Length: 623
Ligand SMILES: Nc1ncnc2c1ncn2[C@@H]1O[C@H](COP(=O)(O)OP(=O)(O)OP(=O)(O)O)[C@@H](O)[C@H]1O
Ligand SMILES: [Mg+2]
Image 1 (cartoon, rainbow, N blue to C red):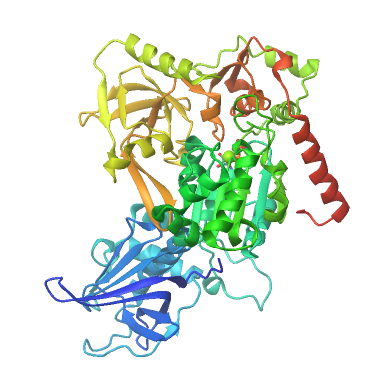
Image 2 (cartoon, rainbow, N blue to C red):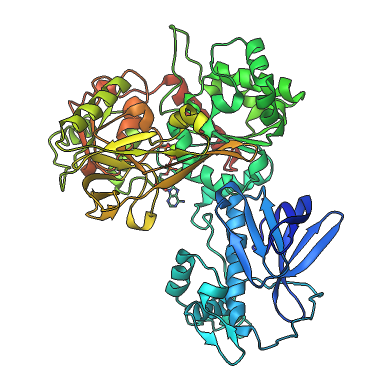
C-alpha cells in the first residue's frame, strides 16, 4: 500500500506491434514498477523496472491512454510512434488513478517546454531520471496549456485535443484551481513554484480515526471497524479497496444490497457456500470446487461489510474452511480480515428458533481479529439533536423527550415538488406490491429500460448484487431514487429522491430531485469485484422505484425523505437502522411511534462496554 505518485507497482505486459497493429512480441512482468521520469532532453518518459532488469525508457509522445478499466485496476498506455502498448493490471485503483493523473499533468505541463530543448528526431533517449514530485509550476503550466495555446515558434501544437488527451473533469479541475499567494515569511521555504503539490486522493478527506485504520491495515493486522450508523465505515472500506491490489483483495458484504454500495460481492458467493446451515464437511467440499478454491487460495485480504448480519456459527465455519482449503494452520488460513459493521444494527437472520450467535461471539473471532477500531464522528447527519436521538435509540433507550420529538414528526410535511417520502417496510412483500401498484396507477405508457450485463448468464447474480433491476419500467410521475453517486458536489448521490417529470427526445428520463435540481439521467455502469481481478458489470439507469423499500435493503444507505412505520419491527436494532437512514429530523416522518419497539441486544451492549473498557485501560486507541 506504499504510494508515490510517480511509481506504480503492477503487472505490466509490454506488447510490440507492427504498423497494422499485429502483435510481434509480448512480455509479461508480474512484479513490475512503472516509473515516470525525464530523459536528457527533458521529455517525459516511462521506465518499466522488474526484479531481473528494466525496459525503456519510453518517450511519451503521440500516445493514447486507455482508462476504461481503471476501476478494475487496469489501463493501457499506447505509444504510437514506438508501436508499443504498456498494459498495466493488478494495480490498486486509487494508486493507478493518482499515477495517471500525475503522468497527464506532467505531460500537459511539458507541453510548454517542448521544443525549448528540441532534439533531432533520430536521437534516442537513454538517460533516465525519476521525475520530480508535482509542484505548483507544473500545475500552472498545465493550466496554461489546457487553454489550447499553440507554440507556433517551435512548431509544436499544444492543443489539448491533439496532444493532450485530458479528461473533461481534469481540464475543469485544472482551470478551477487557483494558486495561493506565497505568504510564507520563511526565507528558506521553497518558492511557490517549487512547492510540492499533493494530488487529491480520496484519502485526503479521511478523519484521524479513519487514517488510523489504514495504518493498521498497512501493518498487516486483521481489523474490525465499528461505529454507529453514518460514521463512514463503508466509505472507508471503499478507500481501502482502492489501495489494495485487485488480484488478491476480495471485497464482500453480508447482503447483496450492502455489497452493491461498496462494489463487492456477497460473502456467500465468494465462499462458494450457499447456505449457512450446511455442516462443515459440506461447506469445505463446496469451497473446494475448483472455481471457488482458486479464489480462497489467492485471497490475501478479505473485506466483509455489514458483518453484524453474518451468523457467528457461519463465521466459525468459514474460518475452518479457509484453513482447510488453504492448507494452513493460521487463523482464517492466514487471510488478513477487514471486517466492518455495527452490531447494534440488524442482527443475523435467526432460523428455526435457534439461539442467535453474533460474529463477535464466534469461537474463532478473537483469534482472527487483532484490532478493533471504533469510528466516532458521524457524517451522515449534521444536526446535533438528531445525532443524540439516534445514539440513544442505538443503545435501546427512548426516554419520553425523544418519544415526543419522534412523535412530532408524524404529520410533518416532508414532501416537496411532488416528491413523496419513501416508506420503509419491515417485510419485502409489502415493498414490491407497493411499488408495482403505485406505478400501475400512473397514467401513460411505461418506458422499459433493459440493462446490459457483461455476462448475461450471470443475470441472477447481478440482480442479487446490483441495486438496480435488469428491467426497469418508468412513467412520468414515477417516484425514483438514485442508486449510484453520480455527482457528489451537486448532491446527486446514492439515495437521492426524485420524480420523473418527462423523457428527452432520446428517451432518457428527466428527474426532479428534492434539492430542486432537474437532471437527465443516462446509463451508468456498476462493477462488482468478484475477486481475483474478475468483475461482473451492469449498465443500466441508476434509478429504482422508490415509493417503498425494505429496512433490510436500506441498511448501509443514506436516504432523503423517509416515512417509517415501526409497528412491524421484529428485530433488535431494526428501528435504529430505519431511523438512522434519514439525514435529519426534518426529512423524516415516523408513523405511530411506539418506544417499546426500540430495543438493543443485551449481549451486544455488553460487548461494546467491554471494548471501551479495554480502550480506556490500554490508552492506546484501538484495542
Ligand atoms: N471522511 C469523510 N469525509 C466526508 N464524508 C464522509 C466521510 N466518511 C463518510 N462520509 C460520508 O458519510 C456518509 C455515511 O457514510 P457511510 O455510509 O460510509 O457510513 P457507515 O458507517 O457505513 O454507515 P452504516 O452503518 O449506516 O452503514 C456517506 O454519505 C459518506 O460519503
Ligand atoms: Mg455502511
